[in-house]
Image (cartoon, rainbow, N blue to C red):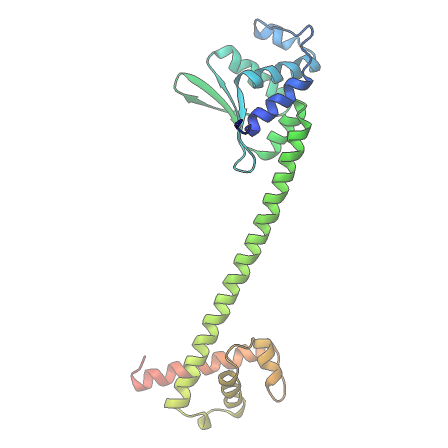
Length: 229
């Protein structure tokens, strides 16, 4: 069974399939590189990538790099990338210099420069999917956090109301607070908005929240007075 090709190999194969090798320039120094026209620059960066470059599968991460063992290659690649408005960073790896790019937009731009249009579209699709997944995950996490926050608040409210019932008595509360306490105990899983609709007369979410906070504050006062705090 043949080994599945890496994304980097697929990009290189795509470049090789369209690369025009007729009369290809072989610059011996930077002076010769500077004299290249745009088409020749594109061909040269294609050849440099095939020989010294690699690109990570965008499903995993965004990383384009060139590994160079001499100063001339570093100067060539930096110049060529800058010509197409891509700015690589440079680090040392053993005896080699590594030029790398991690910005996804710059890598997409590079794939367009070298003519790897199929790989470019695949990467764009991958980026879109990642953004959609990230957006969904953030929304789910936010909703989960809100649900947990609401559940914790409701649990505390019920605990405080039960404490008031057993240690203070609802008959000592204002009528609207007594009603609120009873409605909350009878509907422990109902949202604040829906709780408000069960009151007579109905009130809004903020009104319900205000009454429940007042009940919790009274419960705290009673605990302090009874030494239960």
